[in-house]
Length: 112
Ligand SMILES: [Zn+2]
Image (cartoon, rainbow, N blue to C red; front, top):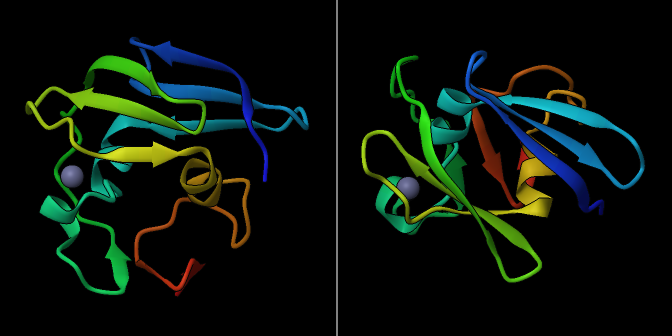
């Protein structure tokens, strides 16, 4: 699984641009990431992680690296408990199979 070599926050476009160590580039809209927050508060304790739409006016007010394996994002609604591992971000990336923005659910690490 890839690791980012660069993470750029575009305020104007409200997205993260992640460049991975295999040179793939992923553009992840902030509201999309908020919808995919994997924390227990957003997802409960089931086996599925579901996309939870929150509206398109969500932005990011802080980004911080968590250890060497994940990104923390503070969203404009105050929510900051999600741990966005590199693996998770890569799974969500529009370039990762199945292609395009994913808005259903992940079960056992697979998009369904
Ligand atoms: Zn959450």
